[in-house]
Length: 292
Image 1 (spheres, rainbow, N blue to C red):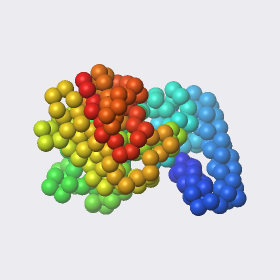
Image 2 (image 1 turned 90 degrees about the horizontal axis):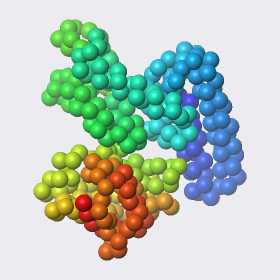
Image 3 (image 1 turned 90 degrees about the vertical axis):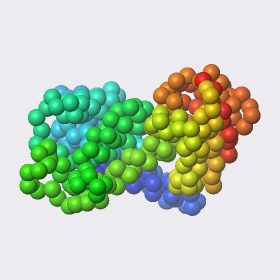
Image 4 (image 1 turned 120 degrees about the vertical axis):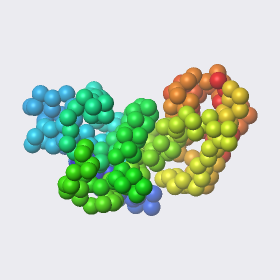
């Protein structure tokens, strides 16, 4: 998984040079990025072939299953587009089945490290918000002591038995959770050149009579605000802030439990760029009416 962080660093380094107009350094770093990326994916594919596995291995030496590590390839490293298919989907399906067995008491387990909560963000990027919500509920229930609102490095099934728990609170675990929760509200899709918003909001939030709002949320493109208010069979969805609209616009994903809108109006104009999964917004600021 360290190699995916290297890719992320090289991608960001190249982008920085592009932003500041240093074309020579941009070209140099881009070549390093592309060469390293090619080598990494060749290694992954060879490891899967040699080990005879149908998931992304945690490391080349063991060919092990380690979704908690592989998840960084999706977020924050944004490599979903490049990861081998269907193996990447198999990886997170395999983890989810393990998660369900543990959650439902069908698996004897002693402990786990709550680094797993970074998988919340992966299910959001995979457009599976219901699974993300399941993970959130499970992990929050394992905060000890409950009133401290934190995790130790190790969670024990028998939490009354004295055992090694590592750092408490564990800020790496906490930062993983923060990053995952941020993805519920916004994340940047660098390959699609878009800003994805509202992709894992709880139904009760968007249906609240008082509505819900996000204010001054930092993104790569500037600070973002949005407000959602239900009115009858429609939602008023206002997007404002201080940001530069990305080249492929803003995408509202998985909204209203992926129900198909009857109509979408953006700044008073009827839009045809929507489906049950996604609503495209190519103007900013934007006032949407989403009719069901």
